[in-house]
Length: 265
Image (cartoon, rainbow, N blue to C red):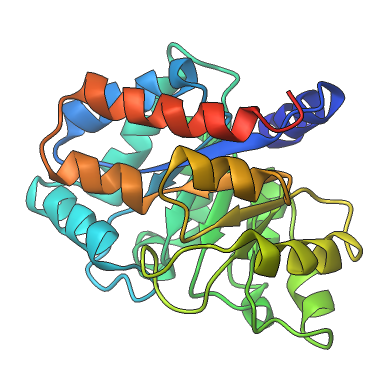
């Protein structure tokens, strides 16, 4: 059982929903982002999404685009992102880490080399937003053979014909993108999300976690009420970009986590 599987099993056994937080690795610098990531579990985060900086983040809105650029300007690389994960693992061997990003940096490093390094660094799963199921031989299947979950995105445009293909080799959890468009662009609406989560849940035994468009504790609670968990990224990253102290960012994360955990707690 992977860390991701174990965490969701524990949450389910306790009638709890998952809170997932996204942080861009290296934003605004290595030391600050490591301090933030190390503080996430204590702030109530169940799963950490660690963003991999990339020069052309086509699915991301301004907040995460700017975060990636700050990280790149500070010298962040794929290797340093894995070093950050490894540093986190020295003090936390139970919180799952999902590396989220784009395929180009992985391809440039070499898939086999990357997977060995990611596993050694303590990465548990991958979300690679620009690799469709038709390209599963490229990274998804090798990742699963290495023991890494490959988490797929489903969207409002993933219809009944497409859904089985999306779910075919997915593991860990399914990430449902609650809105069409880029991150941070609109507000997730529980009444629209609920039937989609139910539709996906009927087709898989995996947890269905909802992200995009969640910015407040109230929204976190509302979305957690119709899914197995909720993801917040842009609202957290935006505060990092504003230069807020780490303690203040973590307090905001805590409020979001408490919102999600109020459901079924």
